Length: 377
Ligand code: DAH
Image (cartoon, rainbow, N blue to C red; front, side):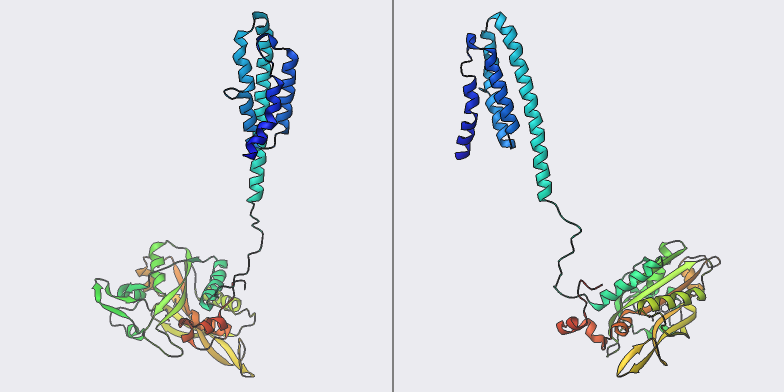
């Protein structure tokens, strides 16, 4: 109510200024006064709402300038000509000034809005104290960073596989003795031409999915859950593996050796990390090797990378030609190298986490002891 009254009071002066605008009573000085007060009001107007009201007072249905225009026909010819031109000029000038003012005020309002809605994207985030990052997630991020820096891309495969993908194409045909070593969880009721369904026992299956989906040269890494029917302090029925594969012309064991050494040094943040390649057997690689990391116990603590005790951490090798063939890769042109390791094993070694079972029991005390805060890098 108050606001309306205020505005009326404010423009009362305008209404007054041209009060004696009737037929013969119009004098040019009267128009000058109206013009001056219009321009004054417009230039002092500081809000869109006020400007709108002012516009209405002047150009509304019974606005001041509208009224003048309406009365023009009642004037004598001579007056009509001179005053008509004056009033028209006034009308045009005031309209133009009002429009310019509208633009100016709209810009100001926009600037104000932008300023009030400004988000400082450079501000550091507030520390988040809700929960902790699981060590497996942390290590997967670290490993992803390292393999990405070698130009590897991420590849994935399903947790539920079948005998064909988990074994046959990985050079473990029916009745191969290695099949039984995997302690596989089978879904006996679900079987088709690809054999029984099963929970994948290793992420090496991703090698096959990648080979069939992409043409070489390529390099991929993958991580995910694998399942084996086993449970004690060093075995859990579900655990995580990282898998890597390079298929290219002329890749061989030398590349694998450099890659694994460099990776382990980076991962354990130890330039002088002592490792050894030990000949081994995997059906899907030939030759195959396992990599051990040296350790010693000093003052009751396990020191990694020095000493004469060895811990196995990686399985790797040159991809078997049968596997390349199953992967529809031209084995006369391309060779491949591959590697796989258990994420929990690497994590336990790097961060001193003792019992594997803790990883999957969702204990609050465990995660508070071994989890990482969100701000840690
Ligand atoms: N799949 C093997 C396992 O589960 C690990 C492994 C060994 C992966 C050698 C590889 C490899 O890619 O070349 O024990």
